[in-house]
Length: 122
Image (cartoon, rainbow, N blue to C red):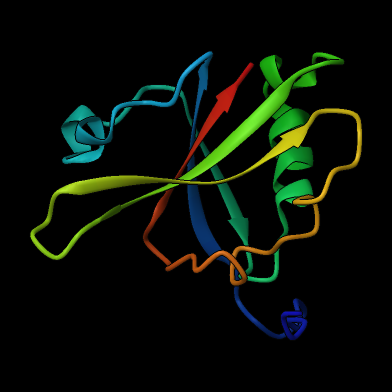
């Protein structure tokens, strides 16, 4: 269990999320700012944010994940030691039913500030 962040005292960081229907974006599109996917959502949050909290924020501003039976598959996108972008799937959330990964936090999953989150919605 992650130690709770005092959100009144700790500054949030920018989490850059990219949403796509039916499949994840290819890792190579994250290689430079010029090739980033266009459907970006910027969220300010903390490392103790869980996947359900992020899902709720995404649903608040994007129509696709609001569908009753939508499944959101999350992945981190980050550079490896050589600078090549890697996509690592981290969990999935059902839009309206609780599941086993709902309360898993970014910190639990090994998120590093600066990583992207790619969200595939089915």
